[in-house]
Image 1: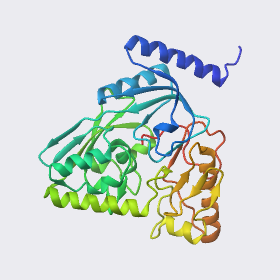
Image 2: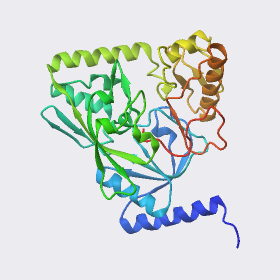
Image 3: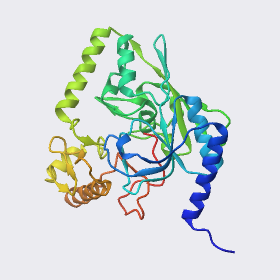
Image 4: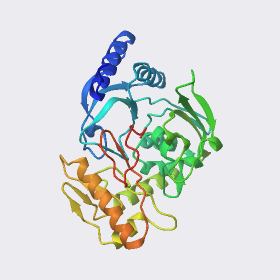
Length: 328
């Protein structure tokens, strides 16, 4: 029996994907540059990309990939990820499911809703408790997936239930907060076995003007302390217990340190900024260098908060999971 190479196997699965998509009326794009769809704006192309405009369409496209045997990943607003220069094998699903419903102090948000849009809508409606989300550049689904937070608040503080779908279920399960296993920048959804769909949040009543003032304060603080005008993926490392990654990197003398097109921000040391037309390999090399220096200097191994996605080849000891696209 003749062995089938990995490339031949992928080509066969992609052909099946194309055929099934045509039969089901799902539009696919080929060889789509993914870097420009991220906040870092580096990285290569995906074999295929589909755009889901609703939760139902998102479910249909995920099922399409599973039926075709093609690895897929959901891309929200493109923050917190570094796409490999070699690109992403399989299907990227661009999540544009933006349903947003308010019922008293309860909010149901689809996974593709931008956190900034959620905060602005809730502010106008006089709903308090989600103001911190203005500093989270991703989508609701990605924020739930990572238990994202800022300004002393986290998603776990406001989440009531999360609709999550597993491949062995016909419909999503509504998981209560306690079953989401939220922790610092963690949730059960990072296992990759479940996809976040809609999320129900519980907020509180407030004066719109006072809420807007808090939101404006958060925005001003972010502009003053983070390199928002530069290409970056967000905070590179998680804060270790009782310390801050930025402080350790600064104390290690790495502010401004550069490898190729990537540089440790001179404004906030826990950010890596890249030049226009920069390379993902430079970002990873710089991040790994920073981790090594901090470990040698302070005996603390910083954990990546950003995710490296796509085809990176052999992963070194510093690598995060690279086998599939994060739902950020």
